[in-house]
Amino acid sequence: MTSYLIFLEVLDGCFRCERAGIKKALDNFVSQKRTNNYNYGIPYDVGSIMHYGSKAFSSNKKPTMVPKDVLYTKTLGSPFISFYDLLMLNRHYNCTGYLNLLRTYMFILEEHCKTCLDRCDHSKTVCYLEGFPHPRDCSKCICPGGYGGVDCKQRPAGCGEEFTATSYPQVFHANVGRKSFGAKPREDYDKCHYWIKAPLKKRIEVKLLSFSPNGIAVDGCRSGGVEIKTQVDQRLTGYRFCSMADANITLVSDFYIVPIITYNRVYETGVSIQYRHL
Image (cartoon, rainbow, N blue to C red; front, side):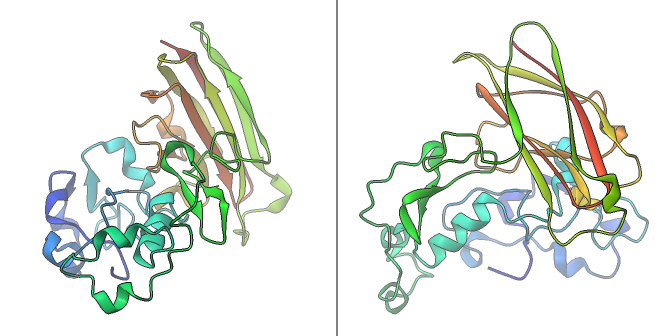
């Protein structure tokens, strides 16, 4: 584990590195092999808080990293700790009991394992979508982004709403933040959680109609944006957007629930989304 996320050998096919536009910092883009970079069986998440933004070290203001799925470009450089970040830390310190399965792995010393925190090793708590028991209260779950409740089966508490998709397009508009806050970034983010639900085995089509205002788009959508989770693995960070240039992007889910997270720490932002089930 390093101060910032670096590429694994197996991920060279997931990103294109624009070396010609990189300032004198190529050592930050060196591929690492599994033999010296172990990630506890956790998949790569472009939304990790440890990930550089797409324009990191750029000498021409163009992207230095382009994901194979280009719609993930603005997810890079996230300001939030992702679910997989939390899971990796808890596995590293064995707060989930997972490390007991890895005692013989070449990078994990037996002496280290003797001090592991097996707090929820015998917990009977079942967490939906492969969340994991909270180390400080094993009766509750730490849930993937966009999910909440004690077992990850509910929409997170707070602002937001649940919508039911039909075969006919519907639209909802959501604002977060306040104009009176002004343009100076606040310490904390305002965040609202929405769910679009369809019948079981139905897929959901989501179209981003608009995002406002213009002028807040930065690497990682750090000032404000919308996250739409349509991917197969709901533990991964979703697609993030924060510009009118993203209008008309259409996503299709692999799950009958699509969590949508709006967040803001500057001024007020608004998003309009069209949805239907297929």
